Length: 442
Length: 97
Image (cartoon, rainbow over all chains, first blue to last red):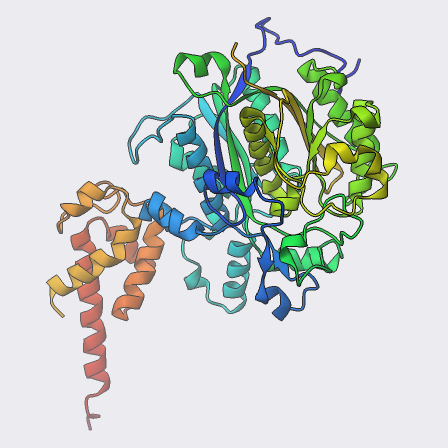
């Protein structure tokens, strides 16, 4: 007997109820160079990395001195949140809260009023982060080491806990269903969607706010820099620094932000006249087992292939019917492996390879937020019928020359794509994949 | 230091933690910090630390228990300020023979 996660058993509920259909009804984005969805949408028109020089990185001696950072977060948070929320809100909470409230509002929903409004028992959130809130943790360490315990105040635990973002989202919206944080490194954002999708599909929630948040943190970046995985050869040209699938790439550009999607039961969405942006057809998560090339920091390609294939089976989509791929591609050595995985999982000839978008070329690698922001971009592309440019891959990897037609895109292109597959991979040899379809009515 | 000046300064300390803005707009000495103003009970720690810094006083853990209303806080601050001023005067008295 094999598990449903491997796609060999169908999803059958014990009660015999059919699985629910799940749609995306709301989007929110705090992406590099902005703090709102509309600003992220504008970034998807550009063909360059929205990164800038960060003097603090140079001062501390990092080899990488560019980062992709959101703008206007504190101002937007001061405008949208009550003082009582802000008094205990860390950096992760601000990012998660802004993206989630924007997605909720975009879905035509209204946050329950504080302090005694109705609890929405049918709605929950899965909102992850990579390192919890390292800014809050380092602040705590400095104060304790200096024996300034009194200065810690009451909210350090709330801000340091890995579920801080989810906790903030639940409080802002008044959610009464599952409220959890997932953490699976750079697969976090995509995995959050897969988890929320399962919960709505199985009828245990009517809607789930899914996403990920990552704060800008010099210390985390320094640790990646020490691994020599950050972009270190393009410090003088930040707009060219994030280079997925480029021969001259030299690592990823660290980024920060948050993305959020409201996943909703189709019938519930129709009943309240919600705006439907796309349908989530299927999802899969797995691990490569840290064998056969896989490790805590490298992928076992078989795991990636199985994850993509399992998501397609889950969605009942034939690989030949995939029109577009939104890849994980970061601009590291792993790009080559990933392209090979897509080829193996889809089994398509080079000439027939689906259109590919690599969003990190535009916004760098926002780590735990990446899968969420890239899924937001994927939904927008399906809904509006376009493909965003792939920045900085004019010198395409030799392994990809045969699929150049699907990759090289110096400006936005019109697209009639109906089915898009989005995958995210992460340290721990973990994989997550979702299958989206353009909404064309029931 | 008058009670009304303590009151005004304490309300500024309280402001960022208040959830019920309507109750805060109509606040008086009798307003209950947790029940009426809907302050998260965990934030009392931050409020007490801010009281200590603002008025240069020390508040003991056992003082927390009696801290229900704005009036309670104002009275506590007034007592501690008075204790401190008494101590300063005592410390500066000429030594007796």
